[in-house]
Each structure stands twice: as structure tokens, then as C-alpha cells.
Amino acid sequence: MIRKLYVSVGLALVLAVTVYGQDQAPAPTGAPSSMAVPTGQDANRPALQQRYRYVIERSDAFALQFPLVPEYNQAITVQPDGYIYLQDVGEMYVLGKTLPELTDSIRIAYSKILHDPIVSVNMTDFQRPFFTVLGEVQKPGKYELRDDITVVQALSIGGGLTHDAKHSAIILFHHTENGIEVHQVDAKHMLSAQKSLTEDVHLQPGDIIWIPTSFNSKMIKKIQPFLPFYGASLGISGGAVGL
Image (cartoon, rainbow, N blue to C red; front, top):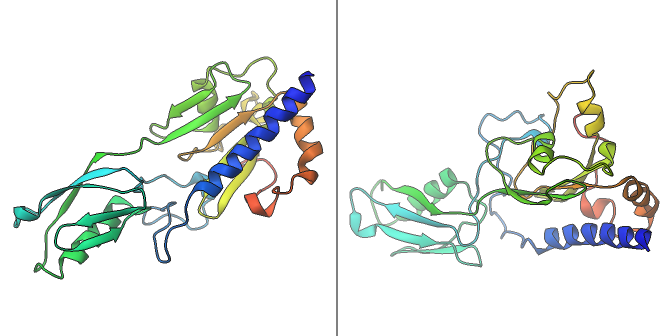
């Protein structure tokens, strides 16, 4: 009975992550990627180590201010379809843009009716970045992603591992522009007295950390070949990350 429960929980978790990834509507052709890399980023740096920069989401709100033409000042909210409406300009797709990209797009749009427009964009409401910790931790749940948090730090925020946790087979579900990557992290290896935490994986918004039990870990290896969506459809990458 217990083993059936573990199998059900494991399958439900993988299925939930798959559905979440499929639910993210693709941006129209030419729309910016949601995984923006800051200018000057080393192109060869591992994707999971890239620093996060906020991108516009649905229901985000911001204020447009035109110092020289205040009659164009306006409050904007991103609609469910990813578009905003600009006074005297019309609709613009903004989902996935960084704030500098949004500002440039608005400036270009208004340059059709204004000469060298000066505009500032100030966020007034936005989606707080978060990560989720599930499985064998003392306080599983959804946590706000503040500053630069690594997997080991996230485990501590979740109250630490339980006695039944499989330290060497922690699973990290990471969302990318190409789908979902699944990585195995060996926390036992990193936390050993002889090892360093300098290569600990940095989290990105939306990441899910699942800490299995020893039985879960064995179960996953056994059922992987039979999962129809395991592999290319999830962007699976094998091995431990950054170890």
C-alpha cells in the first residue's frame, strides 16, 4: 500500500510539471525570450548559473511617464493575452520583455507621433519570483525567490531534510525557453566535509526541487524507460549539475 502511494505521488509530480510546462503559451513569432541574459553574459556559462532578470508577466502593472508631454502619462496593465493598450498608439505585445526592452519598445512606438519621446516605465505591481520545495523536507511549500538562492540554501529554507530523504538524488525541475530540464543534484556529495559549495546550483524563478525517499529514487530509475514523455519532450539532461 505504501509503495503504491509513493508511485502515485512520484507520477503525479512528474505529470504536474509536464502540464505546467505545456500550459505556458508560446509567444508570437519575434517575441523576446522569457529567459533573458544580461548584457555581457558569458555565452558558455551553464544555463542554470545565469543571473535572472525580471520579464513582464500577465497582470503586471506599470506607470508610463512622459516628462515633456504629461498628457500621455498612463497606467498600464498587461492583459491575459500578453498585450497592452497604449494611448494614441494601439496594442503592443509585451509578454516576456525585460523592463529595458519594454521601455525601448514604447519609445519606438511613440516616436511615430512624438519627436524623440522621453518616457520612463515604473513597475507598480508584478509577479514575485518563487521556487517550490517538495518531498522530504520539514516545511515543503512555495517560497519567494529573493536575492541569489542555491539548491542547498533552498533546502535550509524548507526546514532541512528529513531522516528519510535521499540526499544524493535530489531532483531539480528547471523551466527553460525550450521546455523543462530535469537535473539530479547530489547534496550529500556537496555537503561532505571534503567538498566545496562553490558549484552549488543557483535557482531560477519557477524552479521545483523534489527530495525523494530512498524508495522514490529507486522507483524513478525503474519507471523512466516506460514514461512516454521522458527524454526529449522534457529536455532531460542526465547526471548531477555542477558537480
